[in-house]
Length: 211
Image (cartoon, rainbow, N blue to C red; front, side, top):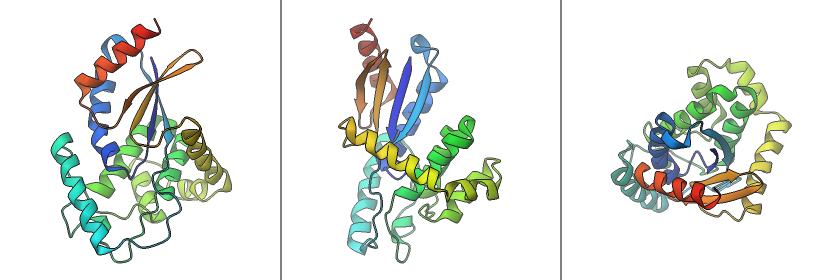
């Protein structure tokens, strides 16, 4: 089965859903061989205004619900990235970083996405900053200078905008979203967080519908 995962590295429910996706990928069962393509959705790209302390506290409270549902670790207020002085919640750089790894180091793109999510949510790191995104790449064995050069390129900027555009073209407004590909047809099988058992049921139904 071919799956398209529409995701944003700075979307909290996407971070929660990473555990579900890991479980599915580790044991695809009837869906093997399972191919996964990543598309960056564009949660808050090109934001320029720093987040307010009130909004930071509000989002940190929302993250608590994601932690309870998913079991994923989260930094606690006031030690989150949201509470860093002058933090701007611009999701374009992190998305572009994943697009960059997808283009140049595709074998580690799933690991890179998860590592960026963990850095932001669990470690409280500012993944809007290129140097932090380069740190994550380097930790996975990607040459830092090569990553930085590709990340800064116009080619990767345009490719990232292309991901945002196709997400809008598909009419997807919320993340995570998982799409099953059946020939020329795309079937939305999941939108929002769910445990792996529920996801398997959705995938089975999608397969039967197009079987």
